[in-house]
Image (cartoon, rainbow, N blue to C red; front, side):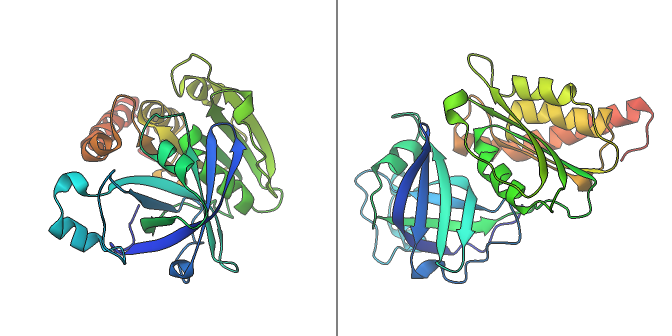
Length: 284
């Protein structure tokens, strides 16, 4: 993924919605969004800036000045969120935030927002959109990947075959995912199972259709690692046909995961290369 230059975009809340009990949908607007470079990818993401309690920030919002003039414990926290939708005509950006009561940073922040409240972010970045030439598509993810999966399904070519697996807490978290494609969607209800366990089982048990697949697999890093091995080593999927990344990792804060992710990715690549070499199959 590549980030847009570190320029802060300022917007305001137009409205909030609750598509499911645990999702808060933020619809943002404002002149600051005019010309925002969103639309090329379906996994566009922005890095929301969450204010620290009690901190007073300059108006207009100036991240460089904040980091220059305020102590580090007053700097806004950053969290990456995928863009659910972008409407350049009315200049509205939609972001879904998972809310589990008082847990975490983003959920309570989003729950407290009201129309007119300011929202600041960095980005967008992004790298994936469904290939129009693929024979079929595979999309897999937990709640953190659901906005990108939803946006990707809307972008599928007419009647393009797609197998989609989404893991969520339970049936109340299901939501409509319209698409012009020929989509076979499976909602996997996690219950008390570890995050991603059901996804690994589902993909491992899938009978792959013939032809070239373009795959998108994102979510908790542990299950993503397992599915990467399955797709790259066991199924021989070429890297250029696979968008795969751990959006988060159990037991890590967002900051901790961002700091450790480069090393994690390097280890995964080394293990993957060794496994491909041991299999005797030419690296895809």
